[in-house]
Image 1 (cartoon, rainbow, N blue to C red):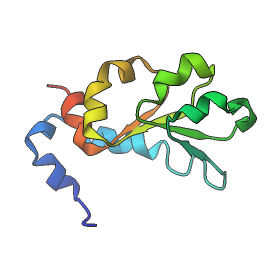
Image 2: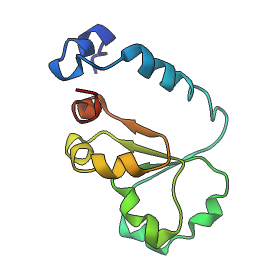
Image 3: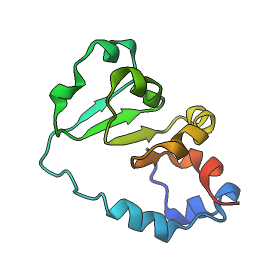
Length: 116
């Protein structure tokens, strides 16, 4: 997989107003935050409704994509949300804005979240 240099991302039209330095600083705040800990990455399938997620305790958890749709039924939320699918990021931008957790988005979603 080719590595994308920051200058390449900045040259994309929808990223012209994206502040890479500010974003890098925000990401650095998470660097090694959970080093040495186990973590759980979970999808959003129906089996989550039958799972006692309280057993996770203080284990750092990463929910994917539209997991927020299950929050009311589960009575539980992950520590972080991750989405890389451009369609999901576009569809969920308003819902993501209402969440009170750190959200990590793939660069393809920046066109919907970067200031205009």
